[in-house]
Length: 172
Image (cartoon, rainbow, N blue to C red; front, side, top):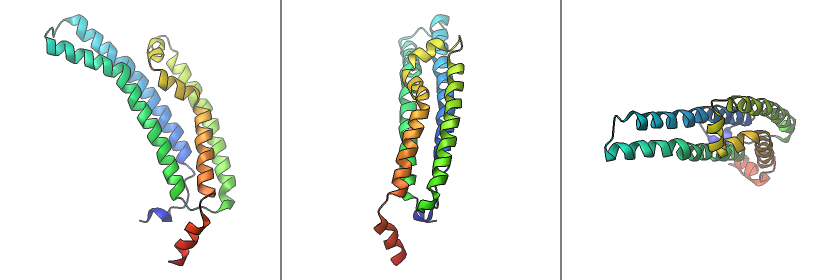
């Protein structure tokens, strides 16, 4: 299958918002569970060797810092994949209205996902964890703006590509 024969990337932004929401919830839960397990291992005294203490400390560090970095790389990767698929998509300008419609749906769902994440993350159990996961919190608070900017850039890339590129494709 030829990548340049792809005809549309309308649901890319919807997929972007759903995946970011899912991973934000999952990573927030992981960042709560991992330090809790590490603290339990430290207080139980089951492994009091130097190697065990080092492993427990590295597990705790991963729970507080590593998850945030993983979320950041996933977030940037999803934005990059949206831009790449936008560049590889050939679309007629008549579909601009469909893109605007799907962008509106994405922004609408983004508000619900942002509010759902806030209600989930501000529960009494997860409040302290949310404070240590600043990047996840920032992305989810600004999910609507991020999806709007990503969608606008995607539409610009899809509809403002070089016309000579598509003309050369037809000449071959």
